[in-house]
Each structure stands twice: as C-alpha cells, then as structure tokens.
Image 1 (cartoon, rainbow, N blue to C red):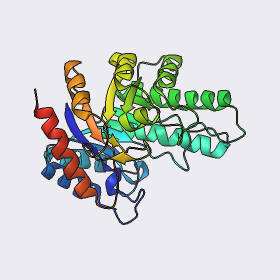
Image 2: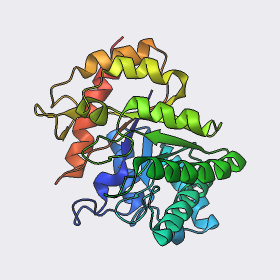
Image 3: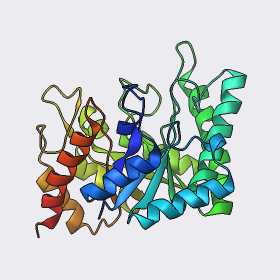
Image 4: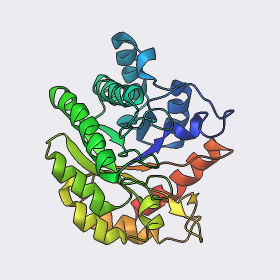
Length: 277
C-alpha cells in the first residue's frame, strides 16, 4: 500500500494561514516519509486554469523526483461547483471544472480524480439532482476514457451531502453510469459517521475500490482524528486490507492548525501498522 497525504491540510481550506506552495508541501511530505501525494485542484496548489501543459509536466517531474507518486487529484466542488446544481451557470461551470480536473490528472500522471456527487439544494427533487450528477459524471468519464483517467465516486456523510451519503448509493450511481472510467473510493470518516461497517463496505465495493481516505474518528462520531488518536481499531482495518490484497493508496485527508504535525503523526502511526505482518 502507498501511504499518501492530501494537500488540503496545506491550503487555505479551512484555515487561511495554512497556505503552502505545492512544491514546498511535496518536499515536506517526502521528508516525512510519505510515498504518495493527493493534490487538491485549487489554489495555491493546482488550480487547472493556472497551469499550462508545460507547467504541469514540470510539476510532475519535480514531485516524482522527490520520490512521490501523485495518487489522485481532488476537486474542490463546494461552494461554487455543485455537480448536481439546478442553476444553469453553476451546472456548466461544475461540469467544465470536473472535466478540467480529469485533464489535469492525466497531465500530472495521476490515475484518479475523486468527487462526491454534490448536494441537493432545498426544494429540489432528489431524482432531478441525482440525474444531473449522473450527467456531470458521465461527461467527465468520457474525457477520462480518452485520457486513461478514472473518476472515483466518494460517499460523503449526510451532514454534508444530502444526495449520496452511503456505500449503497455509491454503488447504485456507479452501476447506473455503467462506465469503465467510473469506480469507487472509500473515506473511513464518512463510513463511520454513517454507522456503516467497514468490512461490509469493502465486500460491497470489491474490485471497484481504487482509493481510500484513512482517518480516525472522535468519540461522538462528528470529527476527524489523526490515525491512532480516535476510537476506531485501525490496526484491524489495515490487517483486513492487507489480507484482501489491497495495494493502492491509503491517503490521509485531515486538516487543522498545525498541518505539519498532523502529517508527521499520521505517518508515524500508519507506517508502524503497515510494517506489522
């Protein structure tokens, strides 16, 4: 498995002052010991419109030379790029942005783009929002088919997304799309927040599972925690993944006041777990 870290911790989301240039962030993660990096498609890291082809290839080379694999590109859809929006302008911009992210991932040598289905605006029917999200994902997947990039659907807890919040819905959307460039990813925080059983989700996703966000969770089930600092048995989870032959990224998606400490603590704990046989 590839230990990876999502660069959102080193961005102004949600703490403005935690803004690091992408290459500085990559150097820090490589020095800590990570072998993978998950890049947000936003400023100051990799906003698609800021980077021409040459700049993307240069960035890919610099990050690769640090010993890091770019495991995924992570679009920032909230609040302006809802894939299920009924607002014509936002809907078009959301589709364009996701397509741009697919192209960005291909140029950076990343196999995956991660996205939730978006959200249903109050007063909008669930069926209509679902249909629009399907259309957005299909457009992105068609571009991915030409480029060799795969879109991964993420189920996001209902507190955040009132459209697609559990594993069964994620599988349903993937099956309805029936597209070779659409697969699934799992975020442990969202799974536990919805009181789903991780092992059942792993069985349900099967070979369609291509990427994992791995975090611990608070006792109340409302907040992310650094791995090993919450209430879940991550040692058992890692052993289960190893036993199942999962060999892709375990990517930490956390943020807080000291992103460097979060990255170091997460790596220290997870690296020990992965070293156990």
